[in-house]
Image 1 (cartoon, rainbow over the protein chains, first blue to last red):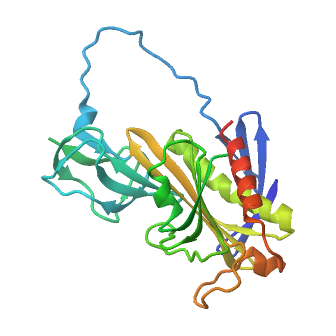
Image 2 (cartoon, chains in turn orange, cyan; image 1 turned 30 degrees about the vertical axis):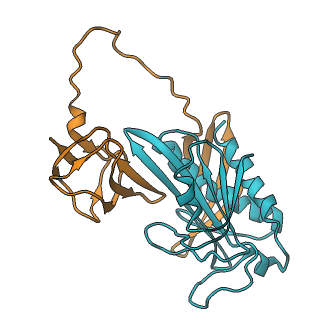
Length: 127
Length: 165
């Protein structure tokens, strides 16, 4: 299907094509491909071995996606429960409410309201 | 299709938060607190089509794609059903003759992985009049015809489901 969209008074021609499981979007002469379903097979790089697990990720909360910190629900020193709302990250297309994976005490909040964060940025550290 | 109808609620996305079954659709006759991104209010009187769809669990990348595609899906329906040329103002607003006709907002709850995901759509269908400060229009104003909300709702859900196959 074909469309025209207008961004800041400039018009673009858009074409959407479906090819097998992928969706292709053509903007002018540029082509973007999206997988419409999660068809990446899960890879296991290392055979299952009894390596002791040391999960440092529990001690920090990272941004799962780039966006603006539009709401912060907690303060340093707060004790949070699993599933408790921590903050909202607003991306162009979505609002993402990030909730606590584990319970813990918030040691430091490294960004402030309105900040733009990148995917993977550490937002909160926990004790 | 599992459709839950409500008379008057704060917002369909709000009600959808407590529902986990994918493809459940929440429809409101009117919304008291309909909103776009942030605190932007969405004028939601009776007559419009306001609904939210619980999406199957997938990753945030897919959800971004789905959100953009929904704007294309609705534009396509407007174009094909009513022979109107809509404009998509990225990321998620649809305009007809420079007036807003549709807004889309995806809201996710993320805890390591996406735990809950809902896409909310506000489409101005049978609205006869807008406050003058809103630069908005409706399909009824543009086509001079009554719009079948349920028919449009079904088309949107059907097309969106295709994206998850």
